[in-house]
Image 1 (cartoon, one colour):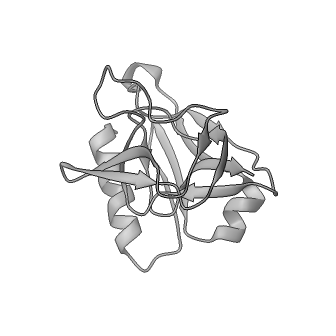
Image 2 (image 1 turned 45 degrees about the vertical axis):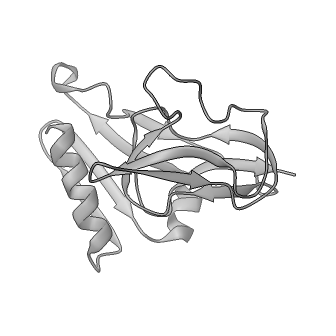
Length: 148
């Protein structure tokens, strides 16, 4: 399964009325859920690639994240591709430990060739960046955790 196919499945899932989707092929196991309680219980998103020859650099093998209950989050308002800077060789908008102000641009999410600036809804210090440059993000995915 290619990255474009996975992106298409994620996009279709986001716009559907489904709340959970599990898909398993010969080389990919994909679990998606819109149930926030289930996501917080599992604290993980899994995309497991069985055949490393077909694996692309943009598909995470296994991602596990533990969130600080005292931290606030900056979420993605749409499905797209996460970019930490405005240009491929540019300086990231923010790094772990940086102080951000409400309304400050923290990243870009590209959707349908449109670059959407994502701004912080809170003041504080960046505690974690949960995605890497070029990763696919879903609607309401936590991009950053911020502590005050």
